[in-house]
Image 1 (cartoon, rainbow, N blue to C red):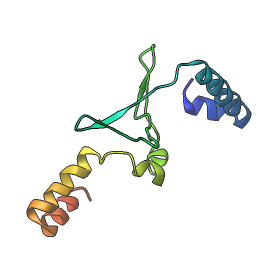
Image 2 (image 1 turned 90 degrees about the horizontal axis):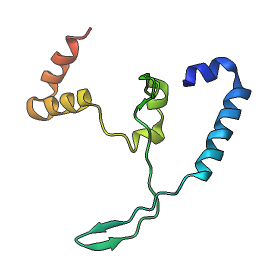
Image 3 (image 1 turned 180 degrees about the horizontal axis):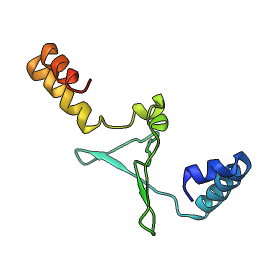
Image 4 (image 1 turned 90 degrees about the vertical axis):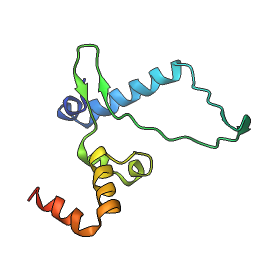
Length: 107
């Protein structure tokens, strides 16, 4: 079931699905991650991840909404988009005027 289908069914159904998902997660094995640098263990206090997209068995694809991607907590862990990287590289190599001219193309 997609997130918009859950939203259409209301807050109570969304809450039920989240609770069911959490119950299923409790049954799954935990992920044990160990980090190393130069062959030596590195203490890991925490890790943050997010789901960038999901493909379901029926072939449907889910990606987070723009509002979700705008969350400041996600911005700390998400890599810049290819377009953001391209524009940053343009600014770095050719300067502000080149960046402004490039952005004018999309007005």
